[in-house]
Amino acid sequence: MTMKAAVVGLGILGALVMGSGPARAQVQADTNELHVYAGELFGDNLTDRKVSGEVPKLDDDFTYGIRYGRNFTESWGLEISAGYSQSSATGVPGGDVDLGLGILDVDAVWHFTPRARTVGYLVAGVGYAIANLDNPIQGTVNGQPASIDDGGSFTLNAGIGVKFFATKAFMIRGEARYRYIDSLLEKFDDSLNTVETTAGVGWKF
Image 1 (cartoon, helix red, strand yellow):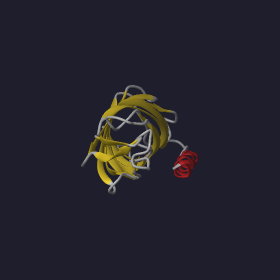
Image 2 (tube, rainbow, N blue to C red; image 1 turned 135 degrees about the vertical axis):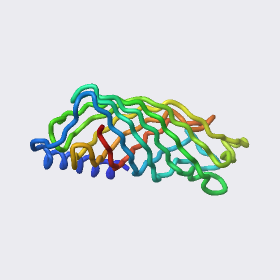
Image 3 (tube, rainbow, N blue to C red; image 1 turned 30 degrees about the vertical axis):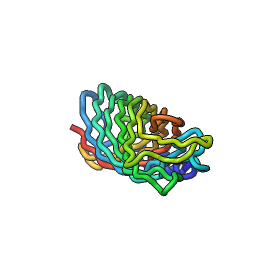
Image 4 (cartoon, rainbow, N blue to C red; image 1 turned 120 degrees about the horizontal axis):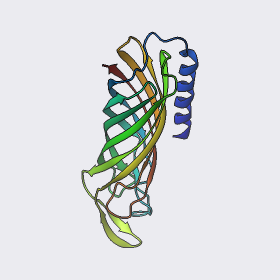
Protein backbone atom coordinates (compact mmCIF):
# COMPACT_ATOMS: atom_id res chain seq x y z
CA MET A 1 0.00 0.00 0.00
CA THR A 2 2.76 2.44 0.92
CA MET A 3 4.70 1.78 -2.30
CA LYS A 4 1.64 2.33 -4.50
CA ALA A 5 0.83 5.57 -2.72
CA ALA A 6 4.44 6.73 -3.14
CA VAL A 7 4.34 6.02 -6.89
CA VAL A 8 1.13 8.03 -7.25
CA GLY A 9 2.62 10.89 -5.24
CA LEU A 10 5.71 10.98 -7.45
CA GLY A 11 3.49 10.99 -10.52
CA ILE A 12 1.56 13.97 -9.20
CA LEU A 13 4.77 15.88 -8.47
CA GLY A 14 6.02 15.07 -11.97
CA ALA A 15 2.81 16.41 -13.48
CA LEU A 16 3.25 19.64 -11.54
CA VAL A 17 6.77 20.11 -12.86
CA MET A 18 5.75 19.41 -16.47
CA GLY A 19 2.61 21.54 -16.34
CA SER A 20 3.71 24.58 -14.39
CA GLY A 21 3.83 26.93 -17.38
CA PRO A 22 1.47 29.84 -18.09
CA ALA A 23 -2.18 28.88 -17.95
CA ARG A 24 -4.80 28.95 -20.64
CA ALA A 25 -7.30 27.85 -18.02
CA GLN A 26 -7.12 28.19 -14.26
CA VAL A 27 -8.99 28.14 -10.97
CA GLN A 28 -11.07 31.30 -10.60
CA ALA A 29 -12.91 32.87 -7.67
CA ASP A 30 -16.69 32.40 -7.42
CA THR A 31 -16.77 29.33 -9.65
CA ASN A 32 -18.14 25.82 -9.15
CA GLU A 33 -16.70 22.42 -10.06
CA LEU A 34 -18.31 19.02 -10.55
CA HIS A 35 -16.16 15.87 -10.65
CA VAL A 36 -16.64 12.13 -11.08
CA TYR A 37 -13.85 9.75 -10.10
CA ALA A 38 -12.82 6.11 -9.80
CA GLY A 39 -9.82 4.35 -8.32
CA GLU A 40 -8.73 2.01 -5.57
CA LEU A 41 -9.13 2.00 -1.81
CA PHE A 42 -6.43 0.11 0.11
CA GLY A 43 -7.86 -1.47 3.27
CA ASP A 44 -6.69 -2.23 6.80
CA ASN A 45 -7.63 -4.36 9.83
CA LEU A 46 -11.30 -4.23 10.79
CA THR A 47 -10.95 -5.56 14.35
CA ASP A 48 -8.46 -5.08 17.16
CA ARG A 49 -8.26 -8.82 17.88
CA LYS A 50 -8.44 -12.20 16.18
CA VAL A 51 -11.75 -13.82 15.27
CA SER A 52 -11.37 -17.61 15.17
CA GLY A 53 -7.60 -17.22 14.91
CA GLU A 54 -7.41 -14.48 12.25
CA VAL A 55 -7.87 -10.70 12.12
CA PRO A 56 -10.61 -9.66 9.65
CA LYS A 57 -9.52 -7.02 7.13
CA LEU A 58 -11.12 -4.57 4.75
CA ASP A 59 -9.98 -5.74 1.32
CA ASP A 60 -8.28 -3.54 -1.29
CA ASP A 61 -10.99 -2.76 -3.83
CA PHE A 62 -12.48 -0.45 -6.46
CA THR A 63 -13.98 2.85 -5.34
CA TYR A 64 -15.92 5.56 -7.18
CA GLY A 65 -17.86 8.71 -6.45
CA ILE A 66 -18.79 12.31 -7.18
CA ARG A 67 -17.49 15.65 -5.87
CA TYR A 68 -18.91 19.17 -5.90
CA GLY A 69 -16.59 22.09 -5.22
CA ARG A 70 -17.01 25.82 -4.68
CA ASN A 71 -14.00 28.10 -5.24
CA PHE A 72 -14.25 31.16 -3.00
CA THR A 73 -10.90 32.54 -4.19
CA GLU A 74 -8.28 31.38 -6.69
CA SER A 75 -6.53 29.48 -3.90
CA TRP A 76 -9.23 28.39 -1.46
CA GLY A 77 -12.33 26.30 -1.92
CA LEU A 78 -14.70 23.88 -0.22
CA GLU A 79 -15.63 20.45 -1.56
CA ILE A 80 -18.39 17.97 -0.71
CA SER A 81 -17.96 14.39 -1.92
CA ALA A 82 -19.79 11.08 -1.77
CA GLY A 83 -17.99 7.82 -2.50
CA TYR A 84 -18.73 4.10 -2.48
CA SER A 85 -16.70 0.90 -2.54
CA GLN A 86 -18.20 -2.58 -2.96
CA SER A 87 -15.48 -4.32 -0.97
CA SER A 88 -15.34 -7.34 1.33
CA ALA A 89 -14.22 -8.42 4.78
CA THR A 90 -11.44 -10.98 4.34
CA GLY A 91 -9.91 -13.38 6.84
CA VAL A 92 -13.26 -14.21 8.42
CA PRO A 93 -14.57 -17.68 9.37
CA GLY A 94 -16.45 -19.31 6.50
CA GLY A 95 -14.93 -17.13 3.79
CA ASP A 96 -15.07 -13.51 2.67
CA VAL A 97 -18.17 -11.44 3.43
CA ASP A 98 -19.29 -8.67 1.04
CA LEU A 99 -18.96 -5.22 2.62
CA GLY A 100 -20.30 -2.06 1.03
CA LEU A 101 -18.54 1.09 2.23
CA GLY A 102 -20.12 4.52 1.81
CA ILE A 103 -18.24 7.74 2.65
CA LEU A 104 -19.40 11.36 2.80
CA ASP A 105 -16.73 14.09 3.14
CA VAL A 106 -16.53 17.86 3.55
CA ASP A 107 -13.05 19.17 2.68
CA ALA A 108 -11.09 22.38 2.44
CA VAL A 109 -9.08 22.67 -0.79
CA TRP A 110 -5.96 24.81 -1.23
CA HIS A 111 -4.78 25.31 -4.83
CA PHE A 112 -1.09 26.18 -4.62
CA THR A 113 -0.58 26.75 -8.37
CA PRO A 114 -3.95 28.31 -9.29
CA ARG A 115 -2.67 30.16 -12.38
CA ALA A 116 -0.96 27.17 -13.98
CA ARG A 117 -2.62 24.94 -16.55
CA THR A 118 -1.79 22.01 -14.25
CA VAL A 119 -3.11 23.08 -10.86
CA GLY A 120 -1.65 21.41 -7.79
CA TYR A 121 -3.71 21.28 -4.64
CA LEU A 122 -3.87 19.98 -1.08
CA VAL A 123 -7.09 18.72 0.47
CA ALA A 124 -8.11 17.92 4.06
CA GLY A 125 -11.37 17.40 5.87
CA VAL A 126 -13.81 15.33 7.89
CA GLY A 127 -16.70 13.05 7.12
CA TYR A 128 -18.65 9.93 7.97
CA ALA A 129 -18.08 6.34 6.85
CA ILE A 130 -20.68 3.59 7.09
CA ALA A 131 -20.27 -0.13 6.38
CA ASN A 132 -22.90 -2.60 5.19
CA LEU A 133 -22.02 -6.27 5.73
CA ASP A 134 -24.06 -8.86 3.85
CA ASN A 135 -23.90 -11.05 6.96
CA PRO A 136 -22.49 -10.56 10.48
CA ILE A 137 -18.99 -11.91 11.10
CA GLN A 138 -19.45 -15.12 13.12
CA GLY A 139 -16.65 -16.78 15.09
CA THR A 140 -14.95 -16.98 18.45
CA VAL A 141 -13.18 -14.15 20.27
CA ASN A 142 -11.01 -15.10 23.25
CA GLY A 143 -12.65 -18.53 23.20
CA GLN A 144 -16.20 -17.15 23.34
CA PRO A 145 -18.79 -17.20 20.50
CA ALA A 146 -19.19 -13.79 18.88
CA SER A 147 -21.35 -12.17 16.23
CA ILE A 148 -20.02 -8.87 14.87
CA ASP A 149 -22.27 -6.62 12.80
CA ASP A 150 -21.52 -3.55 10.70
CA GLY A 151 -21.33 0.02 11.97
CA GLY A 152 -20.12 3.49 11.10
CA SER A 153 -18.04 6.35 12.46
CA PHE A 154 -16.29 9.61 11.66
CA THR A 155 -13.43 9.77 9.18
CA LEU A 156 -10.55 12.20 8.60
CA ASN A 157 -8.67 12.60 5.33
CA ALA A 158 -5.80 14.53 3.75
CA GLY A 159 -4.28 14.34 0.31
CA ILE A 160 -2.51 15.88 -2.67
CA GLY A 161 -3.62 16.06 -6.27
CA VAL A 162 -3.53 17.78 -9.64
CA LYS A 163 -6.15 19.21 -11.98
CA PHE A 164 -5.06 19.41 -15.63
CA PHE A 165 -7.20 21.89 -17.55
CA ALA A 166 -7.64 20.52 -21.08
CA THR A 167 -9.96 23.47 -21.81
CA LYS A 168 -11.21 26.42 -19.78
CA ALA A 169 -14.05 24.29 -18.42
CA PHE A 170 -12.95 20.64 -18.69
CA MET A 171 -10.25 19.10 -16.52
CA ILE A 172 -8.60 15.76 -15.75
CA ARG A 173 -7.91 15.09 -12.07
CA GLY A 174 -5.59 12.71 -10.21
CA GLU A 175 -5.29 12.35 -6.46
CA ALA A 176 -3.76 10.36 -3.59
CA ARG A 177 -5.49 10.62 -0.23
CA TYR A 178 -4.79 9.21 3.25
CA ARG A 179 -7.91 8.32 5.20
CA TYR A 180 -8.43 7.54 8.89
CA ILE A 181 -11.67 5.71 9.75
CA ASP A 182 -12.46 5.41 13.45
CA SER A 183 -14.34 2.10 13.07
CA LEU A 184 -16.59 0.13 10.70
CA LEU A 185 -17.96 -2.55 13.07
CA GLU A 186 -20.24 -2.45 16.10
CA LYS A 187 -17.78 -4.13 18.49
CA PHE A 188 -14.19 -5.39 18.72
CA ASP A 189 -13.59 -2.63 16.17
CA ASP A 190 -10.25 -1.13 15.24
CA SER A 191 -9.42 2.20 13.62
CA LEU A 192 -8.39 1.94 9.97
CA ASN A 193 -5.53 3.72 8.20
CA THR A 194 -6.27 3.55 4.50
CA VAL A 195 -5.11 5.14 1.23
CA GLU A 196 -7.20 6.06 -1.82
CA THR A 197 -5.74 6.66 -5.28
CA THR A 198 -8.21 8.05 -7.81
CA ALA A 199 -8.48 9.64 -11.23
CA GLY A 200 -11.40 11.35 -12.89
CA VAL A 201 -12.77 14.22 -14.92
CA GLY A 202 -14.37 17.49 -13.92
CA TRP A 203 -16.16 20.56 -15.20
CA LYS A 204 -15.85 24.17 -14.05
CA PHE A 205 -18.89 26.40 -14.34
